Image (cartoon, rainbow, N blue to C red; front, side):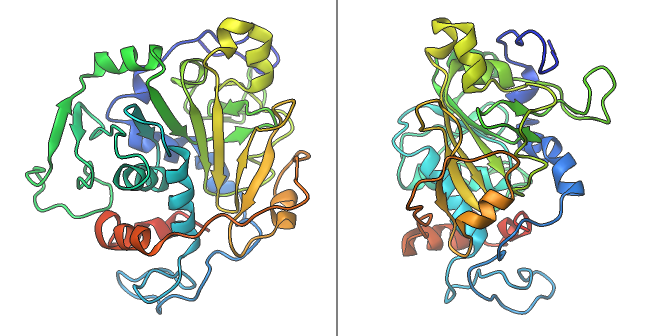
Length: 327
């Protein structure tokens, strides 16, 4: 069910489109509005100069060679991985390239019990080549190089959602200071300027288990004072629904190309948690359409370790497709 932001809360539920094999494409579709219409965010796009551009080479300004420092995209991959740190044996559902790399990196490092699927029904072992269309080595198109650890048919995903045994990282066409997320439409609900995905599984996700967000272009068009349509439920609306709604409601982090944000404030409004190397708190404030909670001292997002860089560059994404997602 879809409802405008000013109306009744959407009922908890999960749409099949959010858990099946279309999952990897949803973040791309949900963020199409802001990707196509928003200028690149403030701040440098990379931390060190990369090799000259050419066929198959990273874009200018990207750092992805074995000798270089981490690129902004690699910092974002690690920040996404940190979202799943210590989650244990739950299902990770990343939507988009960099969240997927982050989840796979977490499975290899800080959260080895994490469960990941191929986007259909197979649970894959850590370090797996990933589903078709995602980066990483694939010996054969038929996936003969994959190691399948288990079977998770589509119907079983709903059981994990209802039990809270899942942590999804979704995209957001709009998000407000309480974490209300919009992937449905832009403009008035009765006559929108742009039709997006619809609410999909966002209401059920945000009610039942931890949710994080990935925004590849941090801008005032995404971080808005009020979303045009509520898809994922924020802290203010969850509180309005009472204890049954808040019991399992947790918005973990929002990772963007500039920073990591969270909701660890007394009123659960968005807080600047860290800024990526090369960006400043001022860059983030200028790219946000509402007042952020900003600590007196804002740390830098941690850089990848040597081992994490080796995994990202050599095993998870040797083609450096990650650099194409960061402006």
